[in-house]
Image (cartoon, rainbow, N blue to C red):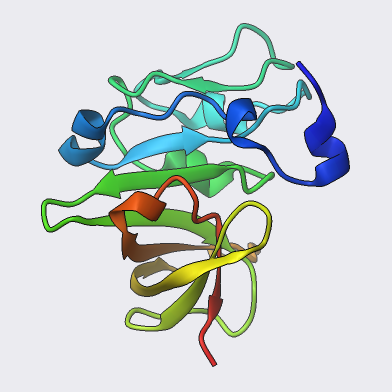
Length: 162
């Protein structure tokens, strides 16, 4: 595998893990991990109560078994690399992306946000529909953003509008 993403600073589509099926995304929220580097890191693997994250050894990039994933969000809460996203497709044609957020001011439910892709390019606007504030001694909150369904595999960062 080419390590061009280290020079670019982002992953290209062909470097991403396979996406969960549309059918699976409509069932319930599922973890999607964009962690390509073979480095010693396993908090996601260790935290998964459903054994949905596979790693043969501590240096292997994690892989999600989408059918086993319960959407509990324990993995996204502990990922030090901000590489896990929770994805869901809703029946109303919208999608939801839950991501880690580490900027002030903290976002709150109802906030309008600009949506950014892996390259840092603006791809639209969305609305925050859920927030889990940081835990004590942590500077990371979880933010769920309502986005057009076709953007759930693109949106990887947000910023307040205005």
